[in-house]
Image (tube, rainbow, N blue to C red; front, top):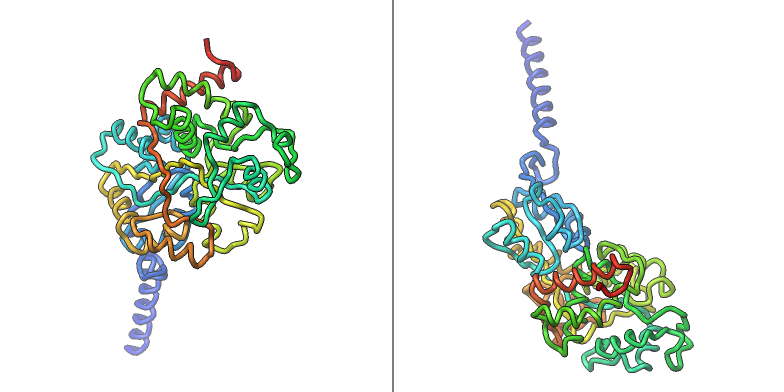
Length: 371
């Protein structure tokens, strides 16, 4: 009788252990339950969404007891219209937007773990045509550049592709225009605005209302004449990858978007695709603004953790360690520069906002100069 009682107790004990393991998440990878992780929620620029969705990135945060959940929005939307009260951090793609958020939220610090130069995704026939037109040239350092001043001259004349001398490769009837996102919502378009406003302002950063009004006359058509524009940077780049030269002959992107596919070797970048750098260009510094200590830890890890830094580089972002990025460039044999010299600063948030608001007024007026 005692033996059967002992067997029964053993079975009950074994069942209790199994239940405890199931309820406690003992079968989770890494030996710990996900319920032990602290959830930190953020709103980010859309170009960073694939990085945060990567299981390896999630696992790297989990090692530090964090589950990072993100929503995507245009960087200007993050700074102006997104309800930040439901988030622990904001992670726009530029310093001006981050500084606005920092001031509004009275945050005490920011983190800039990585950056990406602005670039132009295009195709070999387009490069050939623009080279003949004197707009594109070789940098002498293994990559090609687009002269922004000469490009602005073409736009000012309303030049169409089929009017370019000797153009048999791409005789399209539409205007020579770079495709961008909507400058009213997206940082990539705002960075393009920073580049073109600098050149239109006599190679100087716009820093007054008078300069804003004058420069807007030149640069508004760059946006208004495009027609419909997407609100965030992933959509036009996906069109470029999927639909080819007919739909999107030239699109303003973050270098990281193009480089990440090259580094992955996933076949998305086809042999006829090319990457140009505007001359001058700007660096988009992805800047995280934490609203609490847990979010600050996310920023610190993105900036200091070696495993996360390696993953950031794999997604095409340049970090504080240039060697990691250079090694990936070398292994992929990509025509991507180790560094860029012709780089300018964007206007301050207030001046950039005035430029955007001026263009927005013209959108609302149907593309006509406001009276």
